[in-house]
Amino acid sequence: MKVRFVPLALITSLLLLFGAVAAACDGDGNGEALTLEEFFREVEALDDEFETRSDEIDATIDDLSEEEFLEQAPDLLGEQAGLVREFIDGLSELEPPDEAAELHAEAVSAGREVVDIFNSFVGDVEAAESIDELFAVFDQEEFDAAFERFEQVCFDAEQLAADNGIAVDLNCEEEE
Image 1 (cartoon, helix red, strand yellow):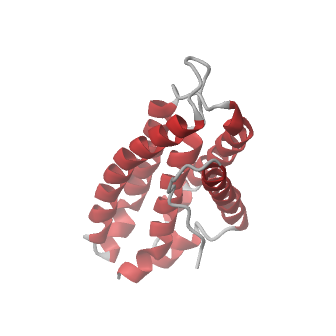
Image 2: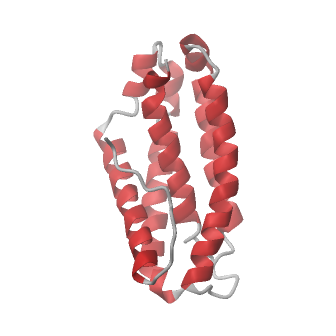
C-alpha cells in the first residue's frame, strides 16, 4: 500500500521544501539582514525542526489502511499545510541578504501559489470516494505547474549557496 502513497509523499516533500526555501526568504523588514551563510544555516536549523514534525504525520499515514487514509486525508493534509504556515511564521523574522533578494521574492510568490492551489483542493479531497480519486485531485495541470515553479526555486537556492561556497541541502527533488 505504501506505493499508493508515493504522490502524497511527493506533496509532503514539496511542502517541506516550500517551508525550507520560501519561508526562510520571507523576511518582513523587522530585523537586520543575515549574511548568506547565516541565512542558509538558519534555514537548515528550522528545516530540521519542520522535517521532524512532518515525519510524524508521515508515520501516521503509513500506519493507516486505505479506508482509514481516505477518511482522514483532509485532516492530515490540512495538518501538513498548517505546519508549513507555522514554519513560515517562525521564519518571518529572517532577513535575506541582498544576494538572495530576487530569489526571496520568487520563492515567496511560488510557495504561496502552491499553498493557495493546495488549499483550493481541500473540498475535492473531502469529496473523494476512493484513493484513486483522492490522488487524481493532485494530478492537475495548474498543480503540476505550481510545483514545477517552486521546485525550480529550490534548485536556484541550492545553486546560490553552492556558487558562494556554502554547503546546503534543501531536499530539492525531481519527479521520477
